[in-house]
Length: 316
Image 1: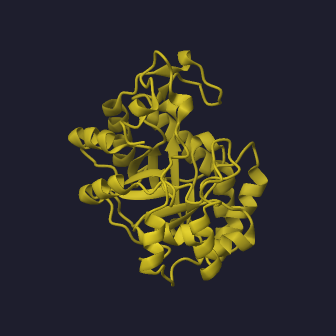
Image 2: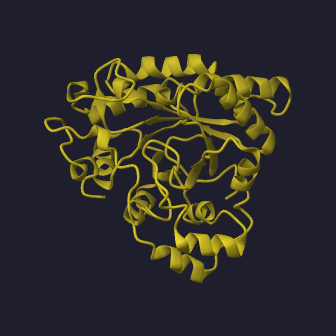
């Protein structure tokens, strides 16, 4: 598969690009996001990952429009836009209005991929942490997914999927879905390799999409455990390349990389035309596993998920 294509997907009229630029940033930074996305388009990125919760939809839309005006791309159709419905809108009657707001922010007629951000429902209007126990409501997976399917039928979302779903939750979803999920976007990196989930998704025809392939160092929940791995350091020193990203790419997963630094953006695209050796793959396979983004803020004493074990169905 090329960097800008590949990955068979249910309900998807076009392939999901293998490499995307992430835009989850801390605090409102519309102009840096707009500039970074425009430069990324110039460098060859065609997939951009956003979410209502990130508040970066508008600058992405501005950058795409600017790229069209500058004739860097011929039209909006040359880019692939992924966005996500936030937990406060994970209600049957709020998903479609939420997508319409997203499209208004983007100034676009459709998104290529629309995802359920978490298997979590909050009261309407709860968009910013910290969250309290009173903010959470039961997650009605069937109702939310039926609303997602309606978004697809209306042509507002070319494909639909989920984020942060375990094998068990995917099994439940597949038991009633009329339109199966195209994608499950989850944390994947050499320190959290998701072998069981990958096998399950391959069997079911669901494309895995990796967020935090470098461990999300610098975020409020991220960790140094990926970037500080001795094994990865040794291999990267020998290769002079981005070993973590190549490892994810070799699994057949799509990956979302996040850097607004031009040099890093170029490096993050340079993972296609070289390979890890079998010895290097074996060394990476033996790295101790630890999930970084555990979703602790969704755990409440009297809520739907009383423990991490319940949130992840033991897959942690």
